[in-house]
Length: 258
Length: 376
Image 1 (tube, rainbow over the protein chains, first blue to last red):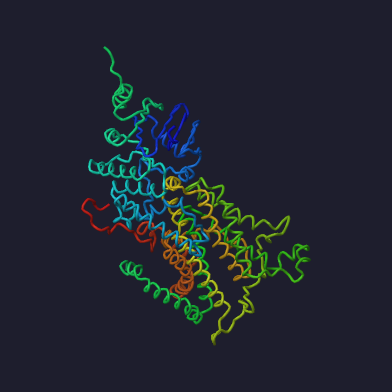
Image 2 (cartoon, rainbow over the protein chains, first blue to last red; image 1 turned 90 degrees about the vertical axis):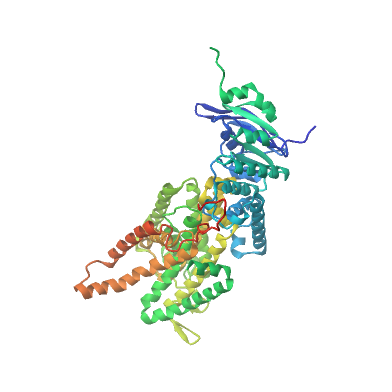
């Protein structure tokens, strides 16, 4: 009997008015995987993503993280449970420095309140030092330590993506969920991103990756789910998925006989 | 200037020196102003009160990014808390209370300051809770309404139970008393004779300095970062595990606390409170102070508060007499002129210095050159 999977999601349904955005979507992500979620535009990838991270309330579904049931009822609780995410359109705290952005990520794992901050107690100072040190390490880890003092909005696009990943890692996640991290990146940046994600996985963080770039997904992921019109049409190893007629049809359309 | 500031930051010893200079100036200022006339000392004391108000509002608007147009309500709450607990009003109107306190109600200020702060914080939460989901203009409208509700309540709660004495306000409020020292009389210190106004000035400045310390520490804390994260992007802040509801309520409550403390001092200082002092205009003036000075930047906020509280007095003392001399009579009332100049100043600020006169330093514009990065 294998150990519990890291993420086990079953039977997720979500309807927006007349549109069934997700129907009976399930997913099983094992520890230490990079798991890919692909599908054509409008397939429901981001909706699914928003459901498991608590941003959208599902109509139905069961959710288990690392053997523990979790309720994706509010975003901050999901973060506390151990899922950290990035956004398709980068959402940094743009007027804060890169270092401060990552420091915010430590919020959920630290405790000091207003009174301790005002009195600057020993515990508060110690915690603050640790937050700063950890944030610095993470900037180093993703390779943008030299921009720590700059405001996030002044960073280049690729560096902003890295900063978002560093900020997410600061919450000590079990699952790092990335919404199209390679969007808008050039070839060099994509290679660097791939190296970074592999390193994160090797350091023990499981990754869920939504991505348009099929080449990147196929090269990086151990398993892939294909979503189309709110349903999982195929789940398996990348090579299998790639050859599947239903997947090809979803992407390219059906060949009509004349 | 900026280089000098950066230098300051890098060498704490210069910072200490600067703080010492500021402290000496603050200590000597009322003595110098006293020579010019008591009105100036009064203006300076009020400046210190406004600094506290502006710092409190800055927590809500500047740090957490929640536009609050009813902030003066918390000032009113603090003022009426002290007014009710340290004046003959309640004992005159409620025999039961008169019976319980045969010597009259004379709550000491050191007890009322925390109480006023707590009551104001409670009102802060009361305002904050229903507006958690509102942002921008909508939030501004609701908070504006809240400020007006408080004022109208104060104006009308003279019947059926006379709680606030309505538009007549509450008089005969005790002055500040600390031990044997009564702030409504002059007192001698180390051979110096300090007037009542000067005593109040020192008290207010001390509390304003404490407020600055509290604000600086909050800003640089985990909580301060959470506020700023919410201001920058609420959804991303949530995704970082920040409990946005609690953190926002805390901003409202802590911001209100400053208003409550300032209000308590105001009531003791004036000896009289009435709803008139807590109009929408006051909220707008405090908001102008922080916008003009530099939203979210504590030195800027202090600067804005001092500028906008001293400036009308300067105007009053110069423009009136000047017009008399030039035209023989006053053409434009200083009050009208003040509003005109406020308006003009805000327009000019918005056009040329949208981040305020003394905004937070920007990091990144002079970024170290990097081969794979163009200037953003």
